[in-house]
Amino acid sequence: MSSPLYLFRLPQLVYINIINSMSTTDQSYISFCSRKTYSTIKHLARRFEKVVLDTYADHTVMFGDSTFRIKSNRKNQEISNEKVKINGQWVDCEVNTEFNMIGLFWEEDPLFGLMKSIEYVTDLFHTDISSMTLYENVDDRLLNLVQQRQRNLQLVKVYTDSSKNEIYDAEKLKNIIRSCTSEIFQLNARSSEELEIPNYYIKCNMFACLIGKWITLETVMRIDCEEIYLCETIFTVVELNRFLKHWINGGSPRLKTFYASAENNHYNELFDGIENDRKEETLVYQSTHGKYKLTFRRWYQIKRNDGVTAAVEFAFNFHYNRYFLQFAVWPVEHGNS
Image (cartoon, rainbow, N blue to C red; front, side, top):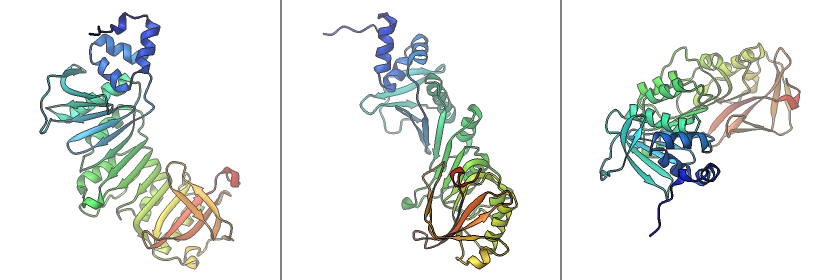
């Protein structure tokens, strides 16, 4: 029969190497043992590069180098005698080292328990939540708590599964849209009713509304973003002409990319009152903040009043079976500053 290994009786350099050879699941589990082990792991363990939250109606999954599954109860599961202390609260816990997963089960006030769990893990590994995906009609409370707790949040996605005919509650979705201050905000959720959000404003690096027709031209010209992608709102060519003139005269100064549905591909209307140069060369614009890529083949160059140039083209999107206006400000290597 093997004897136990008393880890912290070993020389410090030895147990530092042992701790950093562990998975973060094992490190987290050891940290539950006492305040001393928590402090030791916190000061010696390697750090997470990022932590991702997937939030559902009855549980939240936190991904890093390990996975933390946080639930409000233990539906149809046996209650184990394993309990750990999270910030002074005793919590049911299950550890699965094979899948690098820790389950934490909060019987009362799941939102409170979730935030305590997040605080515990992010403090232990000196990190923040980098991104969140909200599913199944989750409201904006967790999003607000995370945004209040840390300096910035890199990415927020709101998602419904169209193959399951999932619908997001309109009021909850509106509250999330109004509350979100992340650097990248992606809406891919079908609302229970068409939204109306007057005077909407956000300052971010990328805003993508893949589902929904609530974005107006006034919203486009008001929000402060580098990249804007809109898939269901269909703009008239007269509106798109107005947008281009807005940009030429100094509006939306941070804007680098705009991609939106157009009612047709009539260039004469689009460039009414706008000087342009026809180009035949093929150029590819790669999004700075996402996976989006725009390919320009037969495009037109327009110039802002300060000399910055942009490419404009109607491109047919076979998925949506209609034309999209694609607009991109060329980076420094194309002569822009």
